[in-house]
Length: 391
Image 1 (cartoon, rainbow, N blue to C red):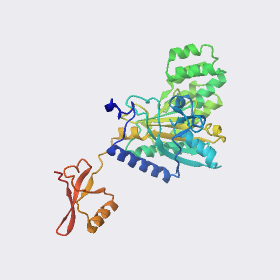
Image 2 (cartoon, rainbow, N blue to C red):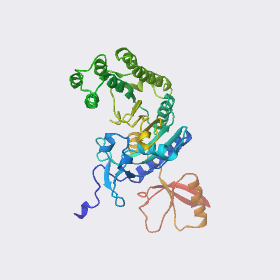
Image 3 (cartoon, helix red, strand yellow):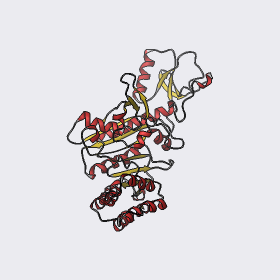
Image 4 (cartoon, rainbow, N blue to C red):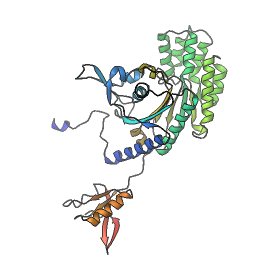
């Protein structure tokens, strides 16, 4: 029984020194880049009252959220499963700015279930959000920033999927579908179940039935947008959505390779959350999207102030797994006993970016395991660094 006390729950794990150092270096690099673009860093709390935490975030986040009772108030609280709604609350409720607001964040989230095989239930979520601008320019900026972030992680998107919830919403509204019908058709589209989709749309008026039936086939390169304009009903919302996707593709030509651009008008993940363009980036080595994002203009309304919003997020732990960074350089071991000259040389090396540690007495033969691969020696009055012979 005692041997079981230290075991962690399934899909929850410690982050050991090597990986932790890589994660922290990656976090700093990305947040510094976001800051260079004007994105201000915020740190939302790990838990909040459920009604605030889940407002406007959709059913998927609700199911992924651990809930508990606050001992002080007796109210239900939740451990955040997504930081994005919290940042929307900060923008809408606490900052109260009238113009554009750029915010970024990084912190752990907790999921009731792992997102997939080998996924952790405690992702380290990092992201950037842009508030206050409803035009496509904000979406373009966010996606370009994502492309820069992937470059900083030594990754490139093998595929970047784009969709637009405006197409499906327009078809549903013009067809006069009930909320129950909408949910059933939405589920069939997500499963790309053509047979069920035909049955569910049997009573839907044309041309909206044909529009819903053709959505799963509108998947592929930029030619999909040309095909969509020919086969979908010429409603104003649909024309606008396709125009936005075309303009987006033009604007991203210098940031995302043409071969990586992909369009999927039936991909409605985040449908109850997103309000316009939605996107996901995929990289070799991961079966799941390495980053997701899109426009979500309606979330701020739940916090008392409607604000245009777009952004993206990714799990740094998954990014690190896929990127497979090179091994970090080891530390320099400084001999004992210490003196002023030794301290001065150690500080000089630290100022140059080296990790330096003193060899506390009585631990010979253990310093390689502690992360040292070199040692500082003084010979003929000069300091030299040589390979560590840990015996």
